[in-house]
Image (cartoon, rainbow, N blue to C red; front, side):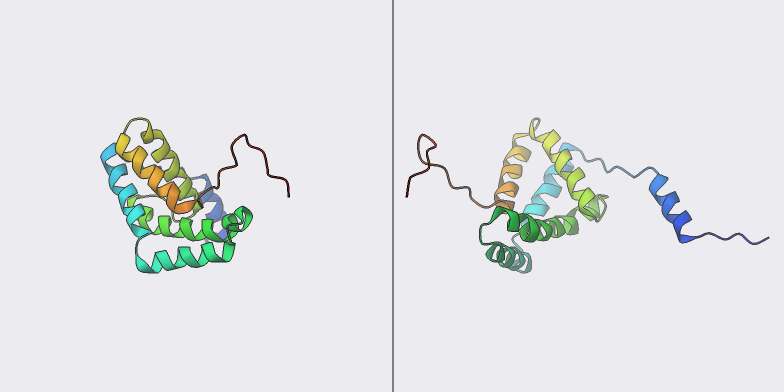
Length: 135
């Protein structure tokens, strides 16, 4: 008797298998978050981020297209060692975990703010009163 398994069968089995949800303690989350922040300081990663930012020219749409994928890759390189999958989904799960711990731990909250500042461009504030000056 010969059993044939097709690639679609394997994909179905993989998709239906419950995903291993990484769980981190507050202390572990601090360590991982610290490592993620440090990863952005590695010269190669800093250069990649700078190149993406320059290409985006402070245009939010281009930031999402150019900077966000680079930032996601940098984070994935760190968090995969802690059980998060090596796709965008892993970064989202890690972000949700950090968000949950932000309210419980001031150190995580501070590191989260620092990470966001590395990812997002500085926002210019509108003039007082919110009015746009006439030209």
